[in-house]
Length: 309
Image (cartoon, rainbow, N blue to C red):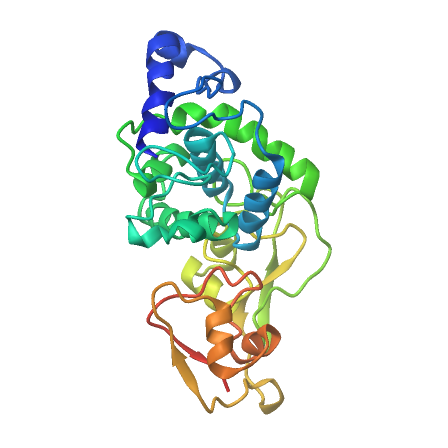
């Protein structure tokens, strides 16, 4: 990981650094991987299978645009979007993770693209939530701890280009440019509330964020999330044309949640599959019992009780 980041940064500073800030965003990516070095022969053309696999994971986990760009910047800098069986010291894979750093996994796990992507995303999301105003490259650096901290931001142009191509191949994600949300594609469906009756709702418009929606409803963002369990934590799945509850109605027995017979307290790293296995239930049943879990399961938290029976 360190060598490839150093190599990328060497080219950046030696060749293009003096004019970097004067160039348009698309021209600011100066990272190149065409040369053979003592560790790896990094192909110049990206591996679209790797890109599409990681992109789909980003979408399924409800990442915001900023977070998706951070993922793509890291792949660009570390491996040029290739699942490399080589690297500096014991670094491996598309994110050049090291088996000697136990958080990433063992060699086989790191060379498994979905595992490597999820491991990186887990670390990156902690950085993103702790630093909401940081650039994609800064949260990538926070997760990777590279010796060349500016390398990821300098890969933004190519990262965005490859992300755009992935969207074209696989369909547009719900994440938007510049951060929180994109509600550019209107969805005429309604009913964003998480269950039970809703006394008042507001309809999301193009360009809305959770902050704007909460302000129109006269509530906090936290309350908006509690009333609409289908909204993920980054609010990247907010959809234009869809109604969201801003005031809870009176409950009735017919709308009451099922009474819980068994609870499971999550641990760090737990997924919905892990929670399901504890109760031997399906994902749909898990969401029936826990309406606050969104459909991508990206808002499950550690040290939280979830109903499993």
